[in-house]
Amino acid sequence: MKNLKELEVWFVTGSQHLYGEEVLKKVAEHSQEITSSMDAAKQIPVRVIFKPVVKSPEEIYQVCLDANTSKNCIGIIAWMHTFSPAKMWIGGLKILQKPLLHLHTQFNRDIPWSEIDMNFMNLNQSAHGDREFGFMMSRMRKRRKVVVGYWQDEKVLDKIDVWARAAAGWHDWQEAKFVRFGDNMRYVAVTEGDKVEAELKFGYSVNTHGIGDLVKVINEVSDAEIDKLCKIYANEYKLVDSLKKGATKYSSLREAAKIEIGLRNFLQQNNFKGFTDTFEDLHGLVQLPGIAVQRLMNEGYGFGAEGDWKTAALVRAMKVMATGLKGGNSFMEDYTYHFDPDNPMVLGAHMLEICESIADHKPFCEIHPLGIGGKADPVRLVFNVTGGAALNASVIDMGNRFRLLVNKVEAVKPKHALPNLPVARVLWKPLPDMQTGCAAWILAGGAHHTCYSQNLTAEHLEDFADIAGVEYVLIDKKTDIYQFKNELRWNEVYYQLHKS
Ligand code: MN
Picture 1 (cartoon, protein in one colour):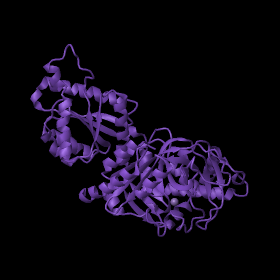
Picture 2 (picture 1 turned 135 degrees about the vertical axis):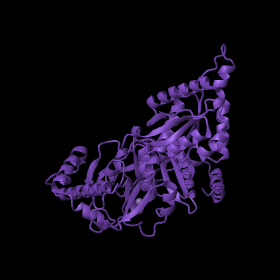
Picture 3 (picture 1 turned 180 degrees about the horizontal axis):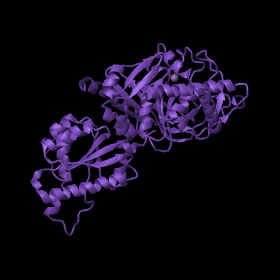
Picture 4 (picture 1 turned 90 degrees about the vertical axis):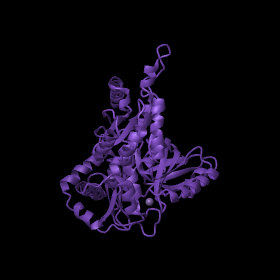
């Protein structure tokens, strides 16, 4: 995954000419100090760039225009050190297309009790200057994140970090291309959706290539490249004996390597950020891609099985958001339940395709038959996943809108060896409890496919949904079914009225 330091957020301070040169000079100095401090802060994953203080409708319009067309600018942090009459902001805010964070801070943390005078008061006016700005954004129904507190406070920096990561995920989606090899799994509903609407709303495009296009690239892979990758497999994983060089299934490992190299070449040559496949359309492929998908996800590609392009795009965005954080993000499926009343939990897995970024040990590389798909036995990585706080996220198409659904879960360290289950797997307990969590998920229409995250919080996804302008529904420890059903009903009315 690329370094997020290539990306910028612009720090824009609003004021007006009323204050005179001396005060405006001070405002600029203070803004520069805040900007440099944030740019250097270890919490902030992107660059924070100072922009000259804006004092007129023309200057505000221009900085918004520049932000829209800048390739590296992923959003604006706005702050009113002094009072900036907000009618000046209408033109700029109207055209601003980049995410917006309103930082409600003050240059001085404390009131200097013995020295405070009207000069101090006139300079440190954000307490009311930011309210004027806030009114205009509310009046314009402008989506933004509001962060309140002293600019050096760790909690403030953490919130800016979360928003910057969401903005980076959003930036990555704009003009992104995802490819589907084959169509949707026959008759499946939740993986379907309106790709035209998704492109309008989310900025990424989804297009299909016949599996033959991929097979052609796979067949161009050389023996030398395959040898090299098989050595990497042997170094990075615990290969079962049958897959070792010269053993009975070594040719299957070579076939898996060939698929991985071809798939990566295809994605790179066409600039795709993620892909889907389906076991119902594998013409010319010897195995259903297993280890190939697992390793490509680990490199940052989005993936969705059975044609699930919405999940592929979500996995990609979440991987970008989580760049540099400990832990991983993976395509996931709620597979099987453990309904022990004293210890209920979900076993999450897929036929093969779970990302090794969430593994808690060196994965085993194994080969087993797969009853579905009618192809040769696929090679896959098998591993367990550790316990701790995590979440599942799902994007569904409700017909008149997209819904981003998040369920916080508590992952459980596995106690059993599962010797006959040859896939990567995770155990978790949905919050607030199994009954409520699963009922709420089903009431909200959440998919069986998700992106499972160990290192993003619900706040990352909430900010992301806000930036995207889509419905966001959270299931967490506070969820109560009666209120949850009301929330879904009220959202239904809201989205009938709110069309943009
Ligand atoms: Mn599936």
